[in-house]
Length: 435
Image (cartoon, rainbow, N blue to C red):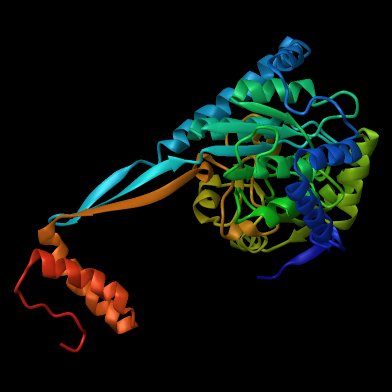
């Protein structure tokens, strides 16, 4: 495969990690040792907030009253799609059992986590959609207690729309804490919360690092870096739509890569010409983010055919993969590495980000090679069980004894031996591989 780069990234989204781990580790250690008082101290320092941390019912109701009805209707539209998609996903995992041999029965149970901590960013943008995606799926999965956590704004608190959304989606507790201190509160069980079994949701590099450090003590959805998007296009694509789709994802932040791979060089050249002008029309902060991402992180490449487009996608393993090309069914069947796939001009990554139904918490930085995004499955443990009657135990015990002794694990072998001696007294068995 030959790739011609018309634009090449000068930086990588992973170039920006200096000092973050030590900072986050120090905050987590202090909060674990000092508890709620230290968490509140960090809230005052970083969130510049000294209000109520655990929202009361009256505060939740007041936030809901501050949300315009049109916005409530829009949130409910998105919630309904996300909930129904999650419910359909849940139906793909069922308890089951199988008789492997007469008297040897094994099975599977899907058990939801008891306590989930759902983080919704609220710094530069108020991520209503993150509350929708994380809390709804936890509720559908059947988690026993769900905490929604979001950064408060100075002297204001959590954005009312996030509060309304978290409550609508089924959060049992809403926590006004940002960043590392918010994740620590959920993980360590502060402010009357149960200790979280799993922490989910996107966030900045400090949130991502806190999840990385806490992983093992708690489950997490994934190690997430800056959001990224790849568009695959051919001569049928509309350059104006392609350009806006790239700009729309670049506004996430200065370190959010966007990529275009196309078989049609005139399309690539037109998009390169259009993007700077489109960025200039955005509000100042959005334009600043998108401009830096486009300048430093964006790539535009030309390849020979659609198989080469697919190979590029497999190599980049993007979080979002958008195909704007002919024969969408071919791409659906061929593509293998992506967090979420968007097929055709009529959809866009923003639909998935906000309201279409599939989850927007997705693998970044190439991790779509080995994992998918957040779903009800992430909140559920697939555990196994077995039951053996005495007749079926005989061949299993003999094989277990022989394999165990071959491995040098005599204690394991004798747990099999004792059952054979009890259930079949006086009989002779082959209990080593050399017998």
